[in-house]
Image (cartoon, rainbow, N blue to C red; front, side):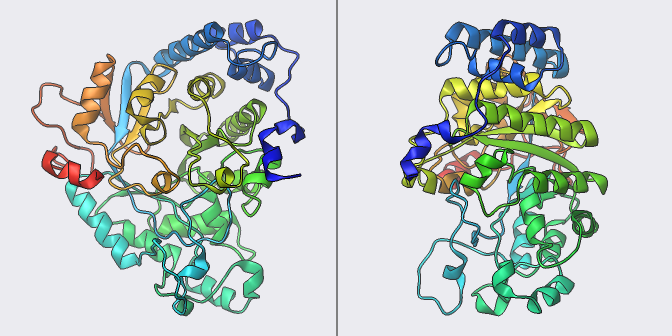
Length: 454
């Protein structure tokens, strides 16, 4: 099979075929009944009895989802004052959807290869986060490459040193220009002045236990004690192994992702869940993914929000190899948000990513079932490196303007949604209040904003 054969997805065993009808599935959705996989497939395809997306049926699905959103969360649109502090781009995992990574060999001290990647020390992380907390952020999000020198802690490093390095993706830190040190030290460094640390995906925790018999619970417990507050449910991509075998064969499988998330919940950590769609998967895979997430939430109740992420394809290996010729269509994006709202009857919040969709379409998603509009993300490297072009920062003033323009209510929230503040629309300026050192001052002065996003 050649790379371009992936443009024809007949090779997958899972197919978007059902014995259900679109009309029956839509009626169940409108009635608030729990949907089954076949129902979700009918809704997300606007019916498997016809080719392509039917515009009239699509609008019916969007309306049902928007009605459900209004029932569950009302007219508020939430967002958080946050910072992205990714620790390193060094990674050897080889995921075909990613252009955030740089080959770890390029970071070695004896190489002559120029690269644009980075590795931060815990001291640098602390300085970055402390500055952002002083400016008013509530949350620091950190999702990073799997640097071969990373260990959970010093005990883990000793175990890795005594292991077969080639089998466990390990090289000692003295091989690299910058020593990344340990996950525990970075979490401790970022846990400054009361900020909420949202970090350590299931994939990173698998890396933090490699070469040991430690459980996911053991690792998450140590990270929690170091200051970790919640876990990003990224590294999910598509939670169907026949898709993962194509786009990320070096990553943990679906069962590993689920086990890690259950472990995080078992030690008291909240978590989010995501889907990255619009590449080689089909509509049935998307709904199978939603089913895995819903079952996980049934067991744990720890998922605070679900985040659909439309695949940004330029500058990624999947596109460069000819395995995809584009990403999801606008119709598919809207239906992904809508069916997420209708299918995930146990997850209150669905996020619209302005980084992935842009401002105009991101706002449209808020009328397709979404109720959260991400955060300020004072820096953002992952989507940008994949060819995204929708900016790296969002001010509170922009949030107020955009959210009120569609007749909804702007609300600052905490990461876990337990703290919420409706913004005073009569105020002359808008800034965060919920952050540990926030006093309502804008995160970035208007004249500095343009310089940040150039």
